[in-house]
Image (cartoon, rainbow, N blue to C red; front, side, top):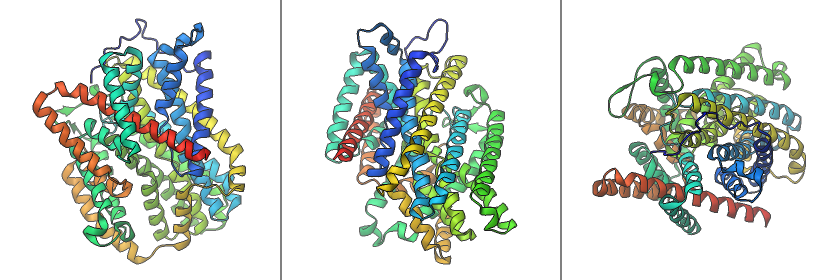
Length: 533
């Protein structure tokens, strides 16, 4: 994708702490956190608010007030959309869901310690993404589809013309399609992402949709998707390690070196080691303040701290890989897997309650900030100026930290009122019921059995296609009709390339961005209306 936007001659990126920008970052962070808390507690969903943040900045930029002209900068708009999106997912998925689990379990004394643990996990999670984005493990040039959609929306709002027309048409079709329950984001992603990875994602979605007529059973009831993800996830982690310590080949067979990324292999190794160390310390602190030391043997306590920290980092990597390729992240499903494994290890219920709150806080913010950094990467020229790219990414990271701080404050002051009205996310109830129900040897055998084909499929596809992870993601996400949208989109893409070659890319990217943006706007609007009602 080409970016003809000229960077400032001074190559100085707008700063997050500039007064006008900082004020709007604060306001949109508060708005995003409120939206996230409200919708996750009433409807159990978290909408993508990136487009909303960009629209707010665009509207303000057109006001005939001198100070508002600053918001005409696409880079300031990028900081604003980063803040609102970070606050939404941070407040809802990384904070409110984890603290709801002890409430549902009847362990109200663990709510505040759970908030402390989730806060640790949230900030470490995004620290890791900032250090790993545009490395050979999480390349900036990969799909990150919602990030592409936001960038194209910002460009269209800035320049108008043919690009804006295509985006507007795609947005209209995205809204209309969503109104009749067509998953337009899935169609849009198919126009942008890796065809092999998305084909497996689409197959997984269709298998989940038609599991009863095809297999005469619910696959999740037999933990088949979970087993596939375990096998594929283990191989994916091994493949990631090979990438970090070995050589990576692109899809064309060319060996990639550090010069193609803004993060070197040495930096990635250091970041992973540092991140794990931070998770280990955080898990130890949470285990101590929740009194687990007095409720478990020394050996079990040490095992718990090690397992919780490993599960946290594995959770964010698997969720990040799925988000990068598909635009979806099966955070709940992967967290449920780590919970089931924890049950099989034999941790007591109170330890599992603490652990799942901590580990489930990683992943969502990691994935969402990946989308935001992809938006900034495109707006800043696709990494052509490394110094400018890194400076811009730093400012986005600062915007995210401001947003997360506001999210922590708002969740901290509001959870009492929400719990008093018994408003908790549905996924928190699932985690609590799973802990209470426990696990059996049958579940362990089923997951272990299905881990084998998951590992084989992932191995066949290699790290550039992530076939096993994407198949399992489709089975776990299980969005109705999304599989058809993905596969039809890939077919349209193949036909368009056959007829018009590379000329079709620009048109398809703009239409796809419109599909995703329209779907996000409709999802946001309809969710807000339902919440108000």
